Length: 199
Image (cartoon, rainbow, N blue to C red; front, side):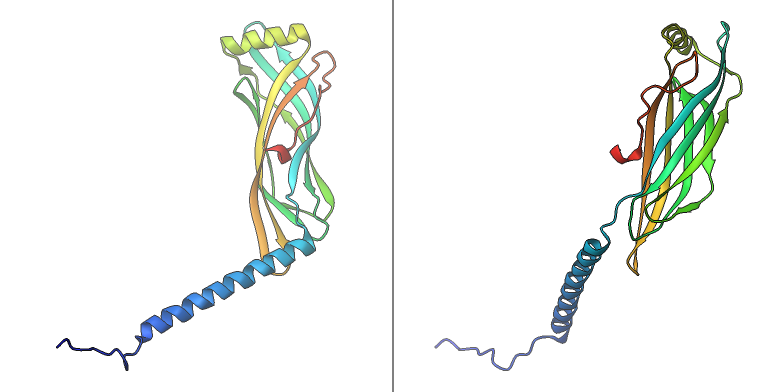
């Protein structure tokens, strides 16, 4: 006759109960965290701080037929904080000015804070040392001077940090990539529209 084996009286191992309790606790903690983040977001409605080129002027452009380029540019870069309820900090700000991939000047800024709903201007006068251009860059410069439309490139970034609520601190990089064009005859910028929101 087959034997009947009863499982009555067997107990669940304590480690199984412990694992179940830990998983339940983690699930509850994740739910509470998600609800807290959602509530804080709805209250503060945070916006990412960003940077933009507000003003650019070509103060000097000396270029000779040997391919030696010497420039000076005035730039105003704005750090913007559109948050209504949080101050923002900017640090590790660095910008590099190029012509056809050739570095002309590097711009930096010490860490600074921007109050809520405010902007902070970074004003630069960026001179370059006389820099020799390669053949390709010389051809581009010759054509640009004939058209009275000289192109440069500005690349840069900054780290930002702002606090949302009491405990939540948000950090991220904001990157800037600009094509700057100037009228050589008077140094004024052409169609200046560059900010890090679109990147």
